[in-house]
Each structure stands twice: as C-alpha cells, then as structure tokens.
Image: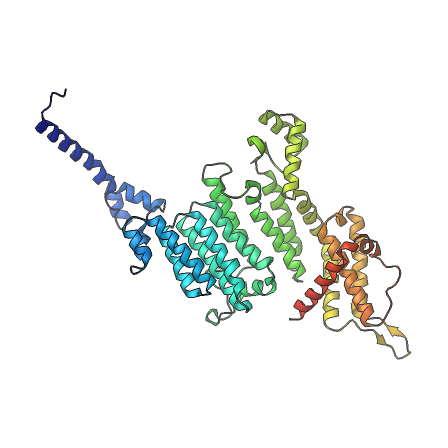
Length: 464
C-alpha cells in the first residue's frame, strides 16, 4: 500500500499538474507579431513559431460560413464530416450548374482542410477539366481553366513543402494550354487574356511576366524538383512515378521548342532545341532513380557506368542493363533525345521554314496555277514550296537514318504530301505516279485518314 494518505496524494497530484503546466505554457505561448519581439522572447511561443514556419496552423477555420450546416459540425469538433458534407454539396452544385455556389463551397472545403493534398489535386482538376468543358464559349472555358490553376497555386502557398502540388500546377499549364482541343486559343489567351479587365495583358495570377505557357510550366516544374530535392526523402512523390515526375522541366523545354516551330515562330529555334537537348541528356539523363527492388539506375548511362551501378546494386551487368533499358522505354527517353538531336540541326530549321511557308501560301490562295501570256501553265507558288519541302525532308532523312522511325517526322512528311495532293486537286491535275515522298506515303496507309482529318483541322484553325 502507498505510504501517502489521501490529502498528501492530492497535494502531489496538484504539484505535478502545476509543474507540467509550466513547459506547456512556456512552449505554447502565442508567437510575437514582429521578428524583433519574437527574437527577444527566447523560447516563448516556440510551438506557435513552428506552426507558422511549417504552415501547420488552422487559422482558416474561423472563415467558414457561420450560418452553414458545416459550421455546426465544426463547432462540435467534427471537421472531417463537415468537409464531407461540403464535398457532397459541391457535387450537387456542379450537377445543377450552379457555378457561383460551387466555387464558394470549394473555398469552404479548403478552409476546413488546408493541408489535405488530395483535395487540392482533385478540385483543381475538377475546375480546370470538368467544369470548364461545361461551357460553350472558349473564353468561358479559359476562365474555369484559370480557376483550376489558381486553386492549385493557392494550394502550393498553403502547402509549400509538397512537391506534387507544384508539379501539378506546371502540368496543368502545360497540358491545358498546349495539348487541349482549344490550345490555339488558350495559348494566345495565356499571354493576352480575353477578360477586358486585363486590358489585353496576361492574368498576373497565373502568368505575372507574360511568358509563353511552356516556360511558365517549366518554372513550376523546376520548383517541384527543388522541393523534391529538399524534402530529404528519396523518391517521395505521392501518386506519381518518380522518373516521370523529374522529367517535367526538360520535357516542358522540348515541348516549348516543338510548339513554337509548329506555330511558325522560328526565332531562337535552334537555341531552344539545344537547351532542350542539354536539359534532357545532361540534367534529367544524369539523375539517379530507384527501380524495382530499389535498384539504382540513370538514363544517360555509359557501359562503365552500367558496370559501376551493377556492382553498387549487387546485381549482374545484364540485370542492370535490363533495368536501364526498361526505364528508357518507359519514359521514351531515346525518342526525345534523337528528336532533339535532329531539330537542333540548321538543316531541320530550313526544312520547317519551307514547309510553313508552303502551308501559308496554300491558305492565302497562292495554290492556283496561272496561265502565262504564251499559253503555258505556271505552277503555283504553294506547289513549288511544297516540292522544295519534299526535297529538304528527303535530304534530312538521308542524313538521319532513323528519322522516319519517329511519329513526328512521319506525320510531317505525310502532311506535306497531303497539302501537295490538295494543290493538285484544286487545280484539276492528276496526282503523278511518282514523287519524292511517295515511299513514306505508301508505307503508312493506316495514317492516311488521320492525316486528312489533321489537314482539315489545321487549315480551318489557321484561317481563324
């Protein structure tokens, strides 16, 4: 039995409580409002300062609508159920196309759960991809795409140590502006917003410096890689394979170079592709990744480096080579390396310029033959340029033997033929039995219908 009587035990408990309260009060004291006062306070408010430094505070809870049913649950300490109620409300408002209420509800959800990353990812995607497609006008679609991107940007501010959110911002900017069906308009809107309040400038919330969409995406993706480097945990990217995650900046540079070329903007073409090649091979290619069973590999690897990694991993060289080759194929590494290698050649630039000039001539009605004063037929400017493009494309494929193993070059050659055939048809001329790119055309009959569709789409969009 205890040697203390009831009164003594109560006193001991009271003293213990007081002693425990001292460090709790000391550590939990509110942080000072300015840096000077905070420095003079010693250890006071250390927990409050840590909450500020690591953005772990929940001060936003007080901003939830006090009249809402969710607030009743918050007051009872049921924040999770409150967020679930708001999620159901958001789905209901979206189905009813009540966009203002949807946006307000989504804002309330993030006030309740500012550090739940999946909410930021899901709702950002929902606004940019699902809600935007509900609108008919391209301007309205662009507005909701921006809302999705802005939502994710806010998520990065609330969760500044989470790499995947920074990556998602870059990915959204890259894909919605560069790959979506509305890309022609979205890329232009990204630098010159259609909303009158921006007076023809870019929306500073998503593009503060008025840059190309791929360069803005590249910045976010670089920030994501820096966050990933600094978190101290290898391959710590939730929901995405690490080797795909880390390719973001260099892939954005390659997409930037490729898209500008397709749009006929050849200023800085060679340097853009050279930068893309260097970043793909020297930066991304030399990163160390973990493969199956946490075996290390890198993409740009010499034979000696394969042997060194095999020894470090405790496996045979043939096993290391299989691991390396499988991941090269998975990220399409060889394709982009070879593609960038061809595109940084001045001969490639010359071929692109001639082809673009030919398509412009066709669109500007310079594809009609003329009758000379002596009665002879003078072939159209468009046909001359297209045949010059065929010649240069053939010479380029002779220089780079593997060129026609890549879809981009196959499709480019087929489109040249498609335009050339269109010029003949509008002039009432038969297609000759033999021509320079006939071999490529005959080798890919499965692509003919797709090329015709792409030709019609391209000519319609370029006229707008």
